Length: 170
Image (tube, rainbow, N blue to C red; front, side, top):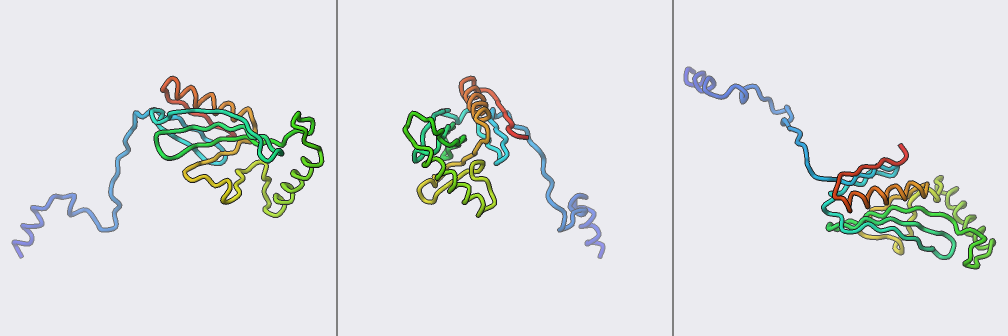
């Protein structure tokens, strides 16, 4: 019995105080990594500035009924960030699209919105497998001005190799 008491007396005090149900202690560390961070209603995108290899902005038409303005951030990793703004092509477009085509497209989108309870003009829209992009994260913007702000912030972070953070809608 004396040897057991002696053994317990030699053990470090914290070891005796621990119980199996105690969570391990953790310590916070700070990072000096320069980041580009975009906080949006659809989520948060964060990337090390040193990993950005390109920031692009361009426009294109989808099936002649919608104009997409897109900003892409390409990195040395395997994930592409895509931010975009979608708007219907206007009837007085020089593309020669008739009002009936635009009305039909908007009616189809309206019907889809009613079925899902969501306004598809405000959500990321994918048509599997046609528009499913592996390793692509997409954010849809409600305002074109917000998309331009994201481009300017990302381009500045990339060009100047500086921390840059932007918050949209909140």
